[in-house]
Image 1 (spheres, rainbow, N blue to C red):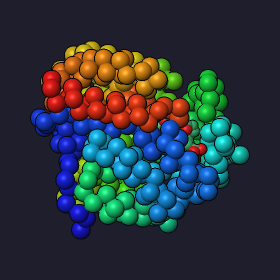
Image 2: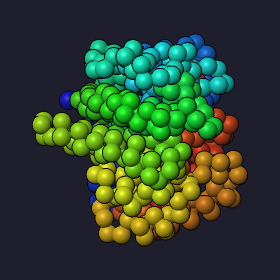
Image 3: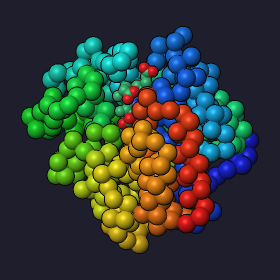
Image 4: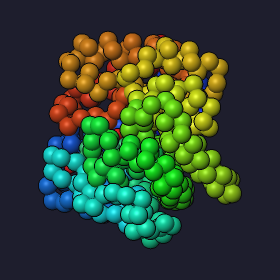
Length: 359
Ligand SMILES: Cc1c2[nH]c(c1CCC(=O)O)Cc1[nH]c(c(CCC(=O)O)c1C)Cc1[nH]c(c(CCC(=O)O)c1C)Cc1[nH]c(c(C)c1CCC(=O)O)C2
C-alpha cells in the first residue's frame, strides 16, 4: 500500500470532473534546465541514470521539491527509447546531440534481428522498480505518471537512428514496405501495452503516450500508420487493467497532429495533449460536448520572453480553455528546453495557480 494522496487534482481533471483550479505539470520537468540535474548527470551516463532506480527517483523528485506545492504531477524519469532497447537495439545518448542508434533498421530483413516478444519485466524491470520507489518517496504529494513513446515515433527512431529533419528513411519504409512497417508497428504496440500495464502495477497513476513525430505525417498517413496503434494501446491497456478492476487515465500527445483532433476526441483517451499550433478556443469548439480533457499548450519558448509575456500568455491560454476548471490540464505545448531559467518556471507555475483559481 502506498501513502494516501494529498493532491489528486490531475486525476479528477483527467476524468472530466469540475475542479477548484486546473492542475499543472511540465513535459520534461526533470531535465537540463535544472542545475541539480547536471550535478547528477555529471556522474552517470543518461541511460545509467534511467537504469538506476535511486537516481531515477531522485531526478523525478527534483522539480517536485524545488517547486514545492506548485506542480500537480510527477513523471517518472526515463526515456521513450527504452522500448527499442528492450526489442534488442543498442541506443546511446550523445552529449549535445541526443539519441543515437549505431545500427538502425535498414531493410525489412533487419526485423529478424529484433526480439519479437520481449520479456518486458526482465528487460525493463528497473523502470518498474523506479516507479515503486518514487511512489513511496512522493508520499502522496502528487500523482506519478508513467509513459511510453507512440509506435510511429518509436519506429521513426529505430529507422532514422536518431533525430531527423525530414524523416526520409522512416517515411520511405511506410511507402516502400507498408507490410513490414505494420509488422514493426504491431511489435512496438504489443510491447508497449505490456510495458504500460506493468508500470501501473508498479504504481503509476496515469499514463502518457508521446507521439512526438505525429505531425511529420500527412493526415492520411497518420490515420493509417499512427492512429490505429494509439487506439490499440489505449484499449489494450484498459482491458488488461480491467481484469484486476483498475483504471488509470490515459493521455495521448500527438505533437503536430492538429488536423486529427476531431478523430482523437473519439479515440478512447481521457486526455489529449495539444501543442501550441492549436488555438485553445478552436480545440474546445471541435471537442463539442465530448468528455475529453485537453492538456497544454503554451509555446515553451514563451518562457524565454520575460515575465510580462509569461503572465499574459498564461492568462489567455487558461481563458481559451474556458477558464480551465473542467476538462483542462495546464502544460507547455512540448518539453521545456535546457536554457530556461528555473525562476521563470516558478513564475509561470505561480501564474497558473493565480489565473486558474480566478477564472
Ligand atoms: C522524443 C522523446 C525522447 N524522449 C522523450 C520523448 C518524447 C517527448 C518529446 O517529444 O520531447 C520522453 C522523455 N525523455 C525524458 C523524460 C523524463 C521525464 C520528464 O518529462 O521530466 C521523458 C518523458 C528525459 C530525457 N531525455 C533526454 C534527456 C537529456 C539527456 C541528457 O542529459 O543528455 C532527458 C532529461 C534525451 C533525449 N531523449 C529523446 C531525445 C530526442 C533526447 C535528446 C534531445 C532532448 O533532450 O530534447 C527521445
